[in-house]
Image (cartoon, rainbow, N blue to C red; front, top):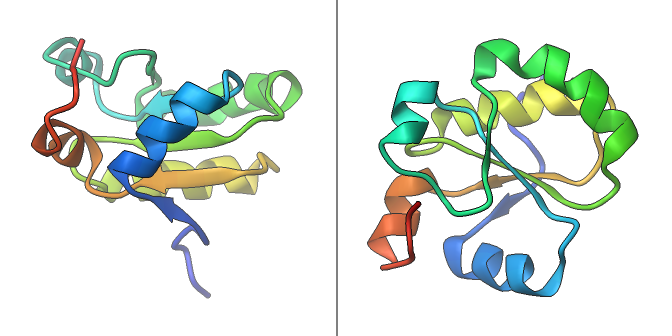
Length: 109
C-alpha cells in the first residue's frame, strides 16, 4: 500500500495556481507556533493533530484544489493522506514546503 499522495506541486506552479484560481485552499499542517513564525500568505493553519476534525468541514465547503504544506514536506504528505481518507478530492502536496517557498524568494506572512 502506498501512503504517498498521487500529486505534488512545486512552488512556482503553486504561485501561479494561487493567482489564477481563487478556490485554492492552502493548509499549513505545522503547529501554531511554527505558523506564527512565518507562513505562505493565505494559508490556513490546521495542525496535523486537528486535521481529521477539519476534514469533515472541508469536504462540504471546498471543491477547488487543496494544497497541503509544512516546513519541508513530511507532515504535508501525512496531511494529504488524512484528507484523502476523508474523501477530499484534488489534494496535492507542496514539495519542499515553506523552506522551498522561502528559497524561491516568495513572500512570507
